Each structure stands twice: as structure tokens, then as C-alpha cells.
Amino acid sequence: MRALITGGAGFIGSYLAESLLEKGWHVSIIDDLSTGSILNIEQIKDHPRFQYAINSIMNAPLMAELVDWADCVFHLAATVGVRLIVESPVRTIETNIKGTEIVLEMAAKKGKKTLITSSSEVYGKSVNVPFREEDDLVFGSTTRARWSYACSKAIDEFLALAYYREKKLPVVVARLFNTVGPRQTGAYGMVIPRFVHQALKSEPITVYGNGAQTRTFTDVHDVIWALRHLMEEPAACGNVFNIGGVTEITILDLAQRIIKLTESFSQISFIPFEKAYDNMNFEDMMRRVPDIEKARKIIGFNPTSDIDGMLIKIIDHIKTDMNKQDGGDPF
Ligand code: UDP
Image (cartoon, rainbow, N blue to C red; front, top):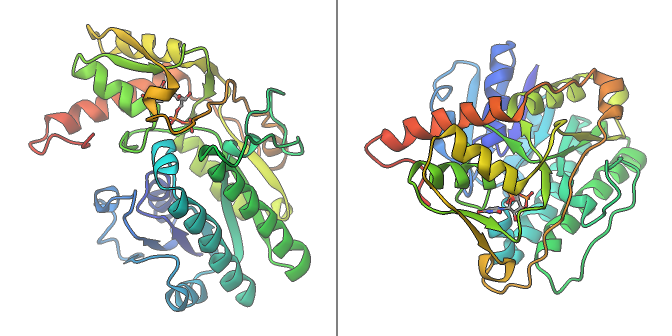
């Protein structure tokens, strides 16, 4: 099998590339390194079944060539990270919508199976947990930039399902829930690498709001397992799947666990949302829990990773990174 991975030098994309190579696939990636990094593909750069293009998915002629070469497309390229979304809404909307349009258009011309990665953000501020794929989506006002990400991902989903119905493109949508693991950067707001860096440097841990908001963190290995199986399962086509972990945790509890596991002297500092996002009219969602029955039924998805196990791996990685001469992840 030949796979094209858009966003293949990103955190999740690079793990997916590695695992497909291990399974004997040929892998081609495209990444503009906006949030990805060449360091993420360092170990596979010279692999005989791997090729990479440092370029934009907006480059339609190049995308046509790459899709042509591939048997299937994993579309992971997107503007991600709450900080980036709030600060660069134009880029968020354009990359997420135009980019997906180009991918789907090229894939449809050649009938190549495509997996579109979406996000648990699409559930918006719904409080109806656990979230099921057919649930209503509840977005805030367009005056709050955060919702542009949720809406752009929802449009991606609509578009993918439209291509499935109208153009008969075999396409599947995966809604990812806070994927975490070593190599994730905290530079764009992601909470775990930020807290771990703060704890290791004995700096205050910046809990936004009162820390009662929850997330369900998902090990990147569980996520890439699911992405590959969704691609390989014909019955998944035309469907949307939640891909998320099983343990809901408050952000305050997360901060306390990280302090404990790093044996840090850091204190917790509660930062009001207005301050955290420079008064950019921010709104957080209070709970985020997936119902994963649908993925369990169709591909046997059964994420097992526990939060402390995931945190220990991430802490070890960040410790090693910080000990390197360049100081590691810059934020
Ligand atoms: N968060 C926090 N402190 C930080 C960064 C994030 O308290 O320094 C909170 C954030 O408000 C959210 C949660 O951690 O409730 C997860 O944030 P992240 O940006 O990782 O992902 P999100 O789920 O918001 O997309």
C-alpha cells in the first residue's frame, strides 16, 4: 500500500508515517512545517520506502501528483492549537477549509480512499457527555475566534460526507480527542507539554480558569492504530468516528499529577481566561468525553493507555529534550 499523509511531519502524522513504514507500506508526506518539524521525521527521512515534500497542501498541482502516486490519503494537515487559532483566525479558516477542499477534489478525481481527521472541538460547548457522533453540535458566537476552528472542521466533515454521497469517494472521518504523547509541542497552547515544561523548570503551573474543565486525553499510539484500521475497513466509509481515550480528568487534577510525577516544587497559578488569551473573547468548553462504541464495533478500537503511563512517557521525553544543548522545545 502507498499512503500519502498530509501534515506528515506533525506530531500525529509522523507517528502514523513511522507505523505504516513498520507495516511495510510506502509512505509519502507533505508538510509546510508551520506547526510540524523536520525533527519529527528525523528517524525515517532516509527510509527507502519514505519520501517527503516540504510544501503546502494549497499547492494544487503538487497535490494532484502526490494523490496520483498514492493508494490512499490520510489528511492530517490543519492549523491546530488553541493559541494559534485565536491569534491567526484567517489562517485557521483558510488552511482548514481550502486545504481539505483540495485534498478531497484530487482524491475524488482518482477515486482514492481518504481519511479526514476532524476534532472533538466540533462538539463545541455541548454538555451532553459522552458525545456521540450523531449528536448536535453547539457553537458559540462568531465574535469568539475559537469557534472558527470548530466550524472549519465541521465544514470539512460536511464536505467529506458530501463527496462520499455525491461523488462516491470512499471517505471516512475521525474526530480526535486531545491526542497526546512524546514530541507534541506546547508552543501552540497544548496543555500537557506546557505543564510538564513548567513543572520541570519549577515555574508556576498555569491552570486556566478554576481548572474544573475536563478533557479525555488519548495516547497517540491508540490514535494512529485507529486511523490505520479505519483506512483498512471498507465498512467505515461514509461514517464519522470518535477516536478518544477512556479517562476523563480535570485540568487541576492533571496539574497536580504532573507536579507529583516530576517531583516538582511548582505551585499552581490560576489564570483567568481573559488573561490567558489576551482578552480575545475566549470561551472554553467544560467537559469533553467521547462515546467510542461506534469505533469499538467497527474496528475493535480499545484504547488502554492510562493517564499516568502517558504522562511518564511524555515527562521522560521532555526531560531528555531539555537536557540537549539547544534547550528543546522553544516556549
Ligand atoms: N489549559 C490550561 N493551561 C495551559 C494550557 C491549557 O489550563 O497552560 C487548559 C485549557 O484551558 C483547556 C485544557 O487545558 O481547558 C486543554 O487545552 P489544550 O489547548 O491542550 O486543548 P483543547 O482541548 O483546549 O483543544
